Amino acid sequence: MKTFTEKWDLSPCFSEVELRYATKGDRSSKAAVCSPDDAREFFMSIWNQDTLELREEFYVLLLNNAKQSLGWCKLSSGGRTATIVEVSQVVALALLGNAHSVIVARNHPSGTLRPSGSDIRLTNKIATALKVHDLELNDHLIITKAGYYSFRLHGMINAKPIST
Image (spheres, rainbow, N blue to C red):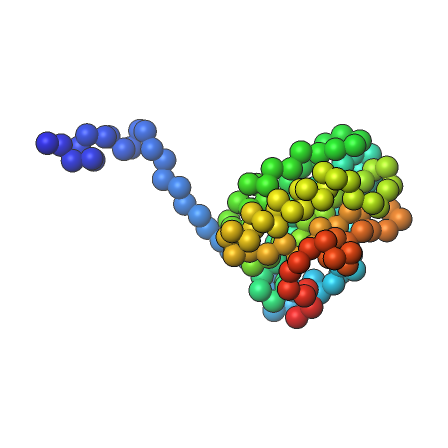
């Protein structure tokens, strides 16, 4: 009887998957994201201001256990009224980024700060999916040029306090 490697010539059929992780810069000098105001300030610094009122976008901020930023990703970009967000992509990003917790943000090009029913459902799905992997959703922000809405500040996310 042939062994697995004799039966299957692995070289042409299968690719090795390798994961590497390296931080840029000195981690000790990175500021912690300790409040929803800090999170909004961070997102506004990376958001393309020319698209804030043009199309809906969704960003993810990865945090370590000291609430310092590990990195961020624009996960999706949509139209005037919606963008598609796959919960599995948020979880995969957090796991691959070695995050302890995440903060997500979306803009509402209409300028309204009130979350929609789909915003609330998505927030609950993300929080539940992250919790399965011992990760935490610290906040979900809705951002406009005029201000922001924090799910945490409005009691819509049950997580440990952001402050360290």
